[in-house]
Image (cartoon, rainbow, N blue to C red; front, side, top):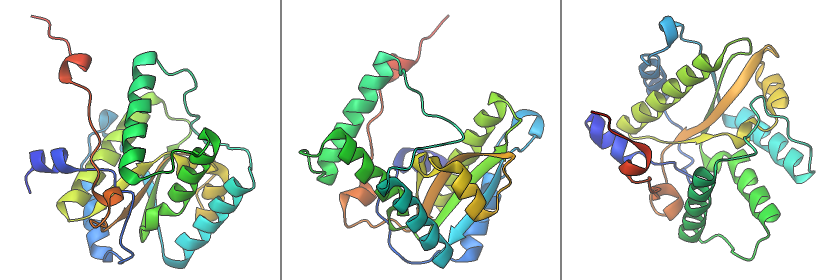
Length: 222
């Protein structure tokens, strides 16, 4: 699979097979991600891969917290005031995805969000989840670097026959996740990423979302 095919066919997998990925394959993916560019080659990323019984224990912890309406406390808060064009794009994408997945349209927005978070906290059935974090004293340049690392990781996984999904929701209880995984409190939890073999028998394993037309986001100055 060449680079362009990887980029154009990568999707956010929301249904995985339970099959465990060999350690050497995960190491290959993560080693490839380390080739990501970063400001002055700072390589600010750090990661923890959680699997097996520990993953299930963490999942139960997070599901219990959301079911009991424990207040969210992510290290990186979600934006509140999205620009209209972006908000419209997100709303349309969510509606189309929910229809493809057969989500119950009668659910209230609150219940639909809770159901989505619970699915996230169960890692969509993936056998592994990678939590990516950095030192909390770093600036937005390092957040950009973290995005480069995450994207390279996802493309490397795709090239190795694996599926991934980047997850912000699994950082909703950042302090609890960090404590569970032994991540120092001085670190900022940036992203979770479930990884495994996609279940290609259902839309949640194969769905590829749309992208805005190029002219909506790019201008040419000559």
